[in-house]
Length: 111
Image 1 (cartoon, rainbow, N blue to C red):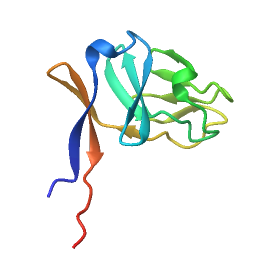
Image 2: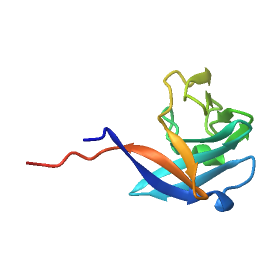
Image 3: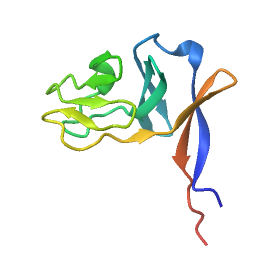
């Protein structure tokens, strides 16, 4: 059994070029970053204050929370500026057939 499954998230053509795009999937909100080195994905809500990171400032590989200006590296989620101290949740991402896909943990079947 695989540890994760790949899911279509959004068409590359629907992304805001060189910016962050909010996408809802399965009851969760994701932030999709069109960065200089590729596409990256995190949960859309900041883990510090719950603000929508898609409303924040994005440049290069840095996303800044609009609420308290905590900043994260979108490549690995590590905090770059206080008050953010915990990494944000990121997901493996790839582009296949014009779609951004993310790897989500496989759901366990009840027996």
